Length: 395
Image (cartoon, rainbow, N blue to C red; front, side, top):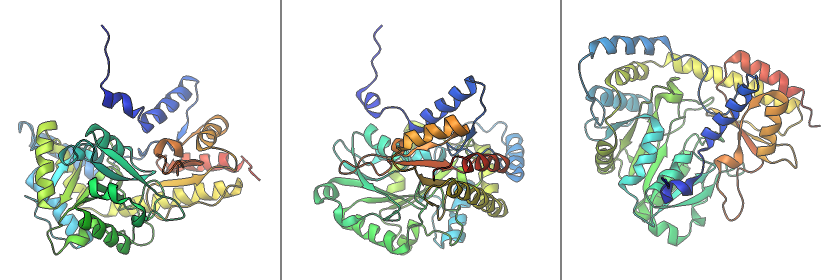
């Protein structure tokens, strides 16, 4: 039988992080255990208090059946209370919050609720692949704005063509930006919101890395809508990066009741919600900040080790103001893919080529000539990686 994939599936190509996993598998087949900075998946354990909360919840909810499609009221209340403490905003947990199965699922499926064939979605490049791929599955068009060290992650809104603005349904912003790690200023968020309000575009803010900061905590786009019911604003968040819960698959979307209502309708037709015992573990995670403070210190230490090693190897200094990643420029004359291959072959270190995370803007790929380090190996692995990198010598 001749099985043919849909046009949508054929058009999107391989998922970048699946390709990274393949690289890791290839090394292991050769008997090599790589140090994996590729996919943002922690080697460290989920904090014990979260695991213990889950164990208790499994017994407590042994016969509760399917979870709520949109999250338990207890979980949504915990989200609203955390957002109040963290950002000073007041959310109605019943109407302005819904659970997601991590950020990826929520972000990808969000487009189905708002994008019609031919509509535009404004996305950063480089950026999280589901922005683009969710757009394509909804038969929309992705319009890319470049994110670079030069512009520090802030879009030049004046360069977005009127034709795109008039047909755009969603604008994605990420703070801290991924993978560069720039924290969006409140001024930029205000300008982006004004642009979206002018053109009737939903401002969708991906804030999965908002707790991985080293100097000042990032603002949330929700802060812009304190006085108008978060009109046209939606925040996506996840506990994957904040609480070392990548495998638990739990997050949320919060904001404008009109937007959340549509998204709830999408989700009730796609999935059956996040398991109740996972939501209870997430409630425990949101109630504790000590493990987050510890994680921030660990990531900063890892960052400093790798940045120092790259400098000693003769590479241009690149550092991330916040977030989980380092966006490192490759040696002169080398592409991101070539540099990533060199790190694999000479150091047995896995990174993600910048070209895999970016799309061309006006014929230029802003990710070209870069690799992404995710600070997810444990500290001993990071120390070993640093010692290997130092010996490369790109003087």
